Length: 168
Image (cartoon, rainbow, N blue to C red; front, side, top):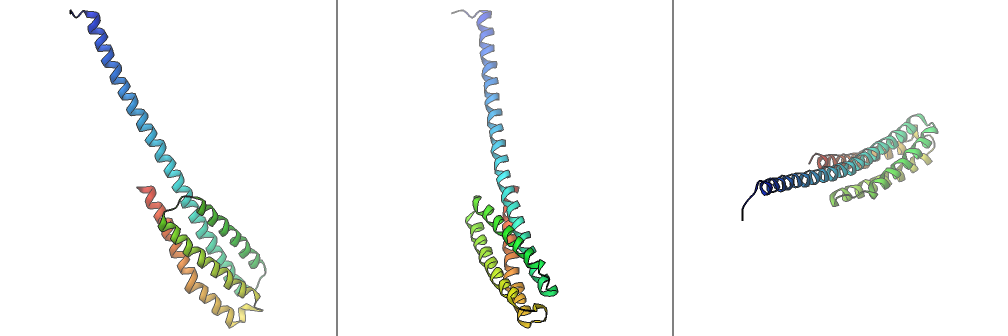
């Protein structure tokens, strides 16, 4: 069998087409990996945003209850309720997202602490003249020392653990 110039050209063309097909396959595979990575980053960013918002809402709740004790201004009760509602929304947003078992455990601790803060703050709101009440101050100290610091640590841990996953 003789190899003619036409067969040589056809063979070279087929080889070039195979190389192009392999290159296209590699590009599509790389493109899919980039899209997959962007999806993961978007999800982790949503988790981090919800965790940050939850942390902020809880801090705002705490500040509103402190301000109520100091000023006895009823608007701080309303502000507390608003931030309480926001914290619940952010917690629900976070629960809807896929969390690691460690993050779920931290969120459960946050939820328990948040319930305790709400319960104790409701007791403070029932006290007349909380600014001059030793009980109100003692309850606020209990919130500060026992629950708020734990929640702050847990929300920080969730926030940082999500950030670490994004960086990976």
